Image (cartoon, rainbow, N blue to C red; front, side, top):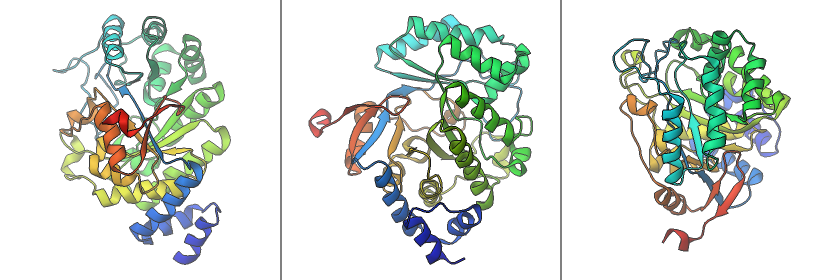
Amino acid sequence: MTLDKTIQKVRTGERITQDEGIFLLSNAELLDLGDLANDIRFTKNPNPWVTYVIDTNPNYTNVCTVDCIFCAFYRKPGEAGAYTYSVDEMIEQFKTAAASGVKTILLQGGVNPELPFEYYLELVRRTINEVPEVYPHFFSTSEIIGMSEVSGRSIREVLENLWKAGLRSIPGGGAEILSDRVKKKISNKKGSSADWLEVMRIAHTIGFKSTATMMYGHLETDEDIVIHLDAIRALQDETGGFTAFIPWSFKPGNTPLEKIIPSYATSTRYLQIVAFSRIFLDNIPHIQASWFSEGKKTGQIALHFGADDFGGTLLEENVHAAANFVNKTNVEECKQLIFEAGFIPAERSTLYEVLHVESRADVA
């Protein structure tokens, strides 16, 4: 195996193996990865558009019993600062968001064993009926597993009931790194990599679409990253249910893991991960650049390293904020950042349908 041969294999459109992926990630120069990834991006998405979605990311509860050591957001039941909002309160939040122009609600929370399954079903039904302006993109795999445990229903039954209530897509949170060697250290109560993949598999077979995610920059190695991407690629071969891949770096502030990993992963590492993801995930339509988790300038640069989507406006976000990491934007700045990076902003739906392509006059 040589670097030149591996790069040539990518250039000819051949799928690289896990071993080739590890070799490429560990040995290729950053700019070579970026060049390869950018070519693939324009092969898959030839328009000079970068998409974005007008969304917000509220949380219905921060009560959680999973105790992930990378999380600063959660509180144990009864702990100071713990909260759980009623369905009525969440609907009011959604109405306020809709009035400000939000079109997607990305909703997640802790794994709260005090909440009955009906709470989640009512939340979906009432969102659709009472706030039809917004699209519900609700509940990570961890929450769905929690619903199964609380209700005594199987994962399939939980997802089928959520589907009947009107839910059509779920976010990709809860994956972290799909390597059990790492999962046992950072989230040993959360379940295995196979659990995350199985929830996604069942969801996709029912008809749900979802994103896939990865949180790196903690205890993982290059090999763990490739194992993660290979698992996502294999499931996408099977189901075709993933709309996009979203990597972000671990934020250590206020987390138990901060004692071991006190600093952020570098912007260089982020660009490497984005580019490599675009190369390896040959069956995923979109790669998201994160202005939010990595900073606006790094997010802009990532658009030249294989990413074709700029994520959401995230008018509310609490998880990274709990780790003392906050970036904020608005719709106009989001569009301006895309223009400044050399692309044309295109507003999209949750499912990556282009709703409106901007012109400079729209932003001026």
